[in-house]
Structure formats: C-alpha cells, structure tokens
Amino acid sequence: MTMPISRRGLIGAASAGIGAAALAGCAGPMALAPAGLPTLKSAAASRGRRFGSAVAWGPAGSDTGSFANPAYAALLERDAAILVSENEMKWQAIRPGPEAFAFDRFDAIIAFAAHRGFAMRGHTLLWHRPKWFPEWLNAHDFGARPATEAARLLTTHIDTMIGRYGAQIKSWDVVNEAVDPDTGALVDTVLSRAMGGPEALLDLAFRTARAAAPDAELVYNDYMSWEPGNEKHRAGVLRLLEGFLARGVPVDALGVQSHIEMKTLNPVTGIGPYQGTEWQRFLQRVTGMGYRLVVTEFDVRDNAQPGSLARRDRGVADYTRAYFETMLAFPQLRDILAWGLTSRYSWLQSFDPRADGLPQRCCPYDGDFRPLPMRAALIDLLQQADAI
Ligand code: XIL
Image (spheres, rainbow, N blue to C red):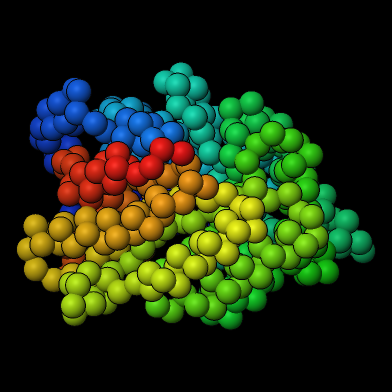
C-alpha cells in the first residue's frame, strides 16, 4: 500500500536536515513572541476572522507536527483558533475496510481541540482521486448493483463521520479535488464509475452531508490557484460550482487551498508570477454565485528563489502579502488556515523539495520555531483588513 501519510512528519524532518536536537535546543516559542503582541489569531479576530492550522497525529513526545509535541502545541495555542487534521480523517487513515473504521488518531486530535477550546474543520469526506483512495476501495467489487453499493459506501462514511464528530465540527470539506487541473473535467474514480458519473456522486456527498449536518458549512475544496497554468483548473471549478447551483446541491463555500507557488520568478517583481486580475475575477465569479470562501491550506513554495535566507524570507513575505491583499478584500472570507505553522513539519519538505536541498521556508515559522517575515506580513494584513 503506497501511503506516505503516517511517515510524513519523519520524512519532512529528515529531508529538512532537522534533528530532534534542534527542537531541544531552540529558544522555545514563548521567548520569541512576548505576551501582548498581536498573533495570527488575535489579528484575525480583531476583524471578525479566524486563523487556524493543520495538525497531525503523533505519539507523545514525537517530533512531528502533532499536538503531542508540547512546543508545537504552544505555537498552535498562540496563533490558531481553529484546527484541521492533516491526514487522519482521510479514507486512507480512518476507513481501513468497507465495513471498518479506525477512529483512534482522529479521536485524539479532536479531544485535544475540545480540551483546549479550538474549533475544528473536517477534512475531508471524499478526496475524489484514485491515488488517495484506500487500496481496498480501488479494488472493491461493486457487485450486481454498483450504484447502490457506491452510494452505500459513501453515505455510510459521511453519516458515520458527521454522526461522530458533528457536534464539534461545523465546517466540512465534503469533496476535495474533483476537477482535473489539466483539462478542467471532473475526475472519475471507481465510486463515480459505479454511480454512472461524477456529478451523481458529488451531489450525493453534499446532499448526505446536508441531511446529517443541517447547520454546518459545506465546502468544495480544491487547489486551483492564481499562478499561470491554472486557467483550465479555475474554469473547471467554476463549471462545477455553476452545476451545483443549477441542480440545487447544498454547497456553501469554495475552499481555496492556497498552496501558492514560486516555481519561477517574475524578473520585475522578483517574486513568483501570478495572474492578479484573473484571480480576482475568478473569486468574484465564485462569490457572485453566492458561495463563501475559506482559505483551507495556505503555504508558499519558494523553489525558484536563490540567494540568502533573508532574501528568500522576504520573497515569501512579499508573495504572501500580494496574495492576501486580494483575498482579504472579500468579506465572504472568514476562516484562514495554514497547512501547518512551522516549516519543520511541512509536507512540502518531501512533496516538493528544493533542488539545492535546503528546506522550504513555507510556513509562518521556520524549522526552529522562529517566526518568519511571512507571519509578520500576515498579522499586518489581517489587522489592516476591513472588519467583516
Ligand atoms: C497532504 C498531506 O499534507 C500529506 O502529509 C499527505 O501525504 C498527502 O496529503 N491538498 C489536500 C491535502 O487537500 O489533504 C494534502 O495534504 C495537500 C494537498
């Protein structure tokens, strides 16, 4: 079974060249952000927004992006009001078989959140990509009535998740990444083929979620972005959202993952290229249809940036600033979640490593838990934004 999930933290830390000693030796987050200064959480709250972060499961004392690491828990408590589980609610993690669920890891995360007063998002009820299905599902025998069996597998899943966690989770990524970025068409999987097409499956996911969680925010989440090359992806997502509207499917918000990328640099600005006008128009089309926005998985790849750490950090902060100047102009955007607070545990260290082998500096804190200029830029922008 190809499942990088449980090894993520270890791979990330190893490829970033960071050992446990670095954590033990770091000054500790409290020394670096004196009480009374604004935080991501307080800056967002001052304008009616919520800032949050992904968190992972890890055994007590492990050096992972887990609440079980006290140093990371301290960062989360300082900067996040809302958490999302990085992997533990995905089918690969929580649904080991057609009739089986494995709740332990997600239960531990949600118990931590409840105990410390964090809100939680649910990610995700259906990641509609064969690559991210559990192996048993890709190989499943759907029998003589495939549509009925596909519907049973899906609705059992959604009803079980919302039944168990719905009291704490009020915002759900019901469907994740259903649009093919290369063509803009909907992706097919064994489930959608059994149902007779992706629309039927996605509609069923949202209708089931709405029946189980009448008051929750139901989100379609995807990574269409503002860099050149995302044109078909954006167009495909717009078509999907238009279709939901036309068919009366209960979708409340678009989750804009916001894994923004500097894979090349604009020679004039020195930061990654982006299509600001097209991006703004895309968001206007989305909100014009009545959808809210959620920034669900923010981080910044800085692969193309050469030079000193200071220069890289400035580039990431400038790119972040440009992005959130556009995003925060939308009153439909309330929740903003980073895909992890520290670059130390970021999935990008293994998913998209830099050619020079240096760690990505992609999150609000660096690998030693020191705040990066990106964090200051975000605090500044959140404080200056209009209240919603
Ligand atoms: C990623 C995790 O960060 C990794 O640990 C895992 O190996 C793969 O998934 N879009 C999403 C997230 O919706 O669920 C992905 O998370 C990142 C891209």
